[in-house]
Length: 329
Length: 293
Image (cartoon, rainbow over the protein chains, first blue to last red):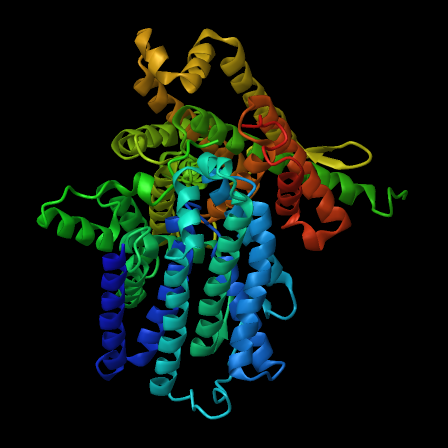
């Protein structure tokens, strides 16, 4: 356990070092996009990987927080950092309401309920005045952070986004490895047993849901400032599907999988931007191929390979590890 | 000109009619989902795309082969159902030993592929499909188009026939038995994997049938299914998937509620079904017709 923790921190340190030099080689706006989606995917993964709850509606937190930070910064003139925090706070509140409703069902029903709730938020955003309907909120200003950091400079802003991502990632990492996280894993593995041991399973699930929603909101709020845009795309069901895809490709229930997955999918979208509707077809094909052929995802497969080379038996399929082994209702 | 609850009767009954029609689609789709889920434990995310394929199949049959509506009503569900059989055999059947959530992810991926292919080919603006029975009758309090009356009567008949087949026939008893204990049913010499395949094809056929019925009312559009499937998921959560009759009643009932909301508070008409879902989850988490675990 301790060795695994050390290894995780080593990998994170290496990634961080890579992140620090990356903007000298790669376009910073692209990197910021990857980081925002990586945080979004990590937040999503906290729920599916460690509690066994597959949310198919996480776009509601990402997108709604984007609207809130866009509106508070642009229309109400709030400072950038307060706007981002406001987005995350509203996502937390939304997560509390949506979570209280959704955790009443498990498994497949949980996925359907979250999808339906997200669609409700989508229609709310479509009709509400402050979101700008089909136009979204455009031209969100990038005012100096804390009144001094000139984030109109992509280079400077990149390091801010890297810091936001790192904080979010460390919060998730700390949660997973805390006693609280152990209870979450116990719920994932055998909910009835966790109940019989006296854990208030529903409150644990709800807290995890709110935490996941908050961090997804933090990602969305940051994204709105980066692209100076909050739009319906961010709350639509396709966005919920994309974050599922990123996490699946990277590796459900792995610490670094969502980061890798986000990098892969965003890169792919960049290259395929000119192909129009084919992006949808290719994303669907990746879903099908990943589910059928390598369910562990990129990071999961690498870890299994490493374990195999070390002579241990290959890690089990993630069917029981990443998604809960409970029979469906 | 008399008014009911401050609303002109034409508007009220017109929306009620449209609500019943949407309810018919909800019922047909959630029925297919429930039958598939009962036997396979897979939530078929491709269902919306298959509904869209049904509408497109009838449009293509007319456009390229000159097959009229009534021919498409029979052929389109069979064709789309056959594609469903292929998908089940090639892809979905490989996942039965895994967590059900993988089935959801797989069928979601298939739905994206199908929708993307159709959007590539036909754009997303929608294609018209001529009404096969134009005209209608004035009932005094409202105008009733013949085609809309046909959709409601026909889909109700299909729903009840499905209910009869599952609950009252020998084939249905095999199906229900396989839902409970597939291994035991297999030991009695019934080919359960083939039954699963055909059931999937049947559920998909129901979705395609709804698509054919929808084609003359809504334009034929590659994205017509992806919105609908989310609403149908909410309908399924509200009704619970345990009961066939429950699915039918919930489908029609929610269609009517949606229609009435359009009359009295149009701003909420898009969200009313989701709100009902939230309320039902708080009061009766297993769904109106579901059985508690």
